[in-house]
Image (cartoon, rainbow, N blue to C red; front, top):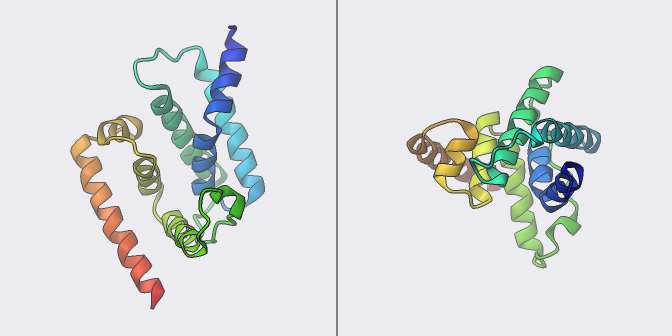
Length: 164
């Protein structure tokens, strides 16, 4: 299989990974599409140099998160606390409306976190190990554990206070 065909296959198999990053780092649909394209472009630029020293998903998350953060800094966007416009078809497996609302609320609060915290919690929610998260974001494994604990407390506190 040639390089272009392999890359296309990898993107198709991992489009959800890219979508999750774009959802957490943008506010509107057009910004999401622009960032998605930029991430795919950056992945393409470095695809032939991927040495498989880490998992493919680890490498993709690293490129996607770095691109998202760089994109935000370049466009000098202020991080806004605008609710994500979730569509119910993204929660096909979720039939329970209460659970769906809780997921929406969680993602709204995640979007309020700083750039690093968003990336860490996204990777945590994806089931990545502390070692993988450390490798992707460039901090120690111990620091990952500390940050995850603090993020959880922060989210729990904010979500509890928003219920009142």
